[in-house]
Amino acid sequence: MNNDMDDATSDQSSLPTIAGGLLVGLLTLVTFVVILLLAEAQIDENAPAPQKGRLDLSKTNLAQSYPIALGGEWVIYWKALLSYNEITQSSTPPNFVNVPHTWVDDDSINPRFTTHGFATYRLSVTLNKANTGLPLGILMPSIGTAYQLYIDDVLLAEGGVVAKTKASSIPHFHPGVFIFTAPSDRFDIIIQVSNQEFYWGGMWHQLKIGSAEMLHAEQNKKNLKSTIIISIFFTITVFNLIQFSLHSKNTQPLLIAVICVLLGFREMESSHLLQFIEIAQLSFATSVRINFLTFYVSVLTVILYLYSTFTRDYKPKLIYCIAAIPIVFSLGVIVTSVEYFSPYMRVFQVYMLVVSPYLLWGILRAVYYKRKNARLLLTGTLFLFFLMVNDILDSMGVIDSVLLVSFGLVAFMICLNYITYSRFIQDGAQNIRLNLALDARNKALENLSKSLENKVTARTQELADANTLLSELAFKDPLTGALNRRGVVAKIDDAKKSYLAYNTSFCVALVDFDNFKKLNDLLGHETGDKALKEGTKIIQECIRKSDVLARWGGEEFLILLQNTDVSDAELVVQNIREMIEEVLSNEIERHVSVTIGLAQYRDNETIEQCISRADEALYVGKNSGRNCVKVAQ
Image (tube, rainbow, N blue to C red; front, side, top):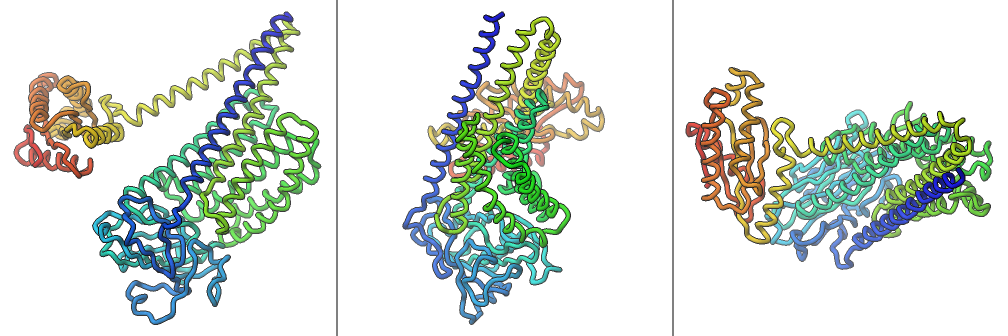
């Protein structure tokens, strides 16, 4: 029995070693990503910046450069909502402000800004003449709290309703990349802003201008970063909920799960990820409440976690008083309006400055007395602290950096998760020793432990199966088994890259079943579904393995014919048309035919334009009597 106990203890002790190696690797990866982001954020000293309300891009080719930050001196007309014509005809001397800024913290003009008000910002841009026909874009962040964006006198984008009074104003966060073509090499960016509800008004964050392609690429990169961070938080949540379900007496995994859920939703809101990927549009009040509430409750939960971890290093009554403050502020967010509760964020920030030394002192005391995992928790806390300082200094304009606190939170939560996991493993090892010592008396408990392990395995497998199914559903059509629109777009992009690199031609064909609605109405949807499935099989048999078939929508299919010019492709699709008419008509005992539009990819056109030409050819075939192949001109 002693040998069994030693073997079991050795197996269990190896798990924290493996997890420790994984922890070091993850923290190293986070550090590397932070360094990489800081390196990318270094702005060229010669990069143009707004000065006295003007931005000279005449020597900058936006088609080849990274997006230009619009941080600098803008013209502002305080307490005025002016159009382009009104500005050009105005004789009022301009005031200048450094953007980004918030009205409540800016005293650069006289009379100074107020919390609530309205203003018009103007920036005159001189463009490189080579870029006048280039699709350009402006990256708009969140604006406090309603805006209208104009290029000269043309409205490009808006968020909420800009107004001079609270009764007429409607706040709304509407960040995004907005595309335009410059009317000439000189134009004005005019932004009307109003704030009648929130404590912070003005243009808080950096705007950017650049080519549409580069701006979309930069925004997609930010969306990917937020998605990864959110995925990490929710993965840690699931992991800790499983631990809590196995050992419900230990509340630390539950606290970590709550913190991660809050941080995940906070990252989702602050990055406006749902809005950028067009899943949901949150109202202004909902967005602000999520932002404030997740912050207050996460602070409360961290306090409770520190106290539960190092109970001997904190005074209970003082901790209860400290924890009561976030509860009061959270209730204020729930029961009062944005206009009322938003100013109190400054009070809460002062509260954080006051209590943070005490919380840090408790961790340092735990390190001094060599409590388990105290050093690791101190490491995560310092990681979070330094990246938080970076963000604060950046927001104050002391340094020019990027927002990194999300990565600090990730590192902090990874450390907390390791601490909880190591305790979980230690508890398991102790249980094994007790089970082996008690032997027969604890057989029932051992069986229960095995049952719980099976449940964990089953739940993990269910998650894996669900992820596999979701992955298939994301890229495959469930009826025909062919790729769906999302799945084939990546294949077409790969074909385009191959064309650009090796000049390998490819064609796109759109196949549409003729009179399909009539077939459904006469023979029923089951027969219609059968026609689509059997038609898919026939097409697959007529094309090569290197070609790609996808259901484009309804009864319309898209075929990507790789390494094929239009003459060879026409032979392939003619064969497809004939086989469907012959074979499929026999199988469903009713005449079935398809019309096919074919287009070969041309130089300097987008994938959308190539597909559009195939679609136009398809409709020519439809108007020519159907059951034919038409090649795009």
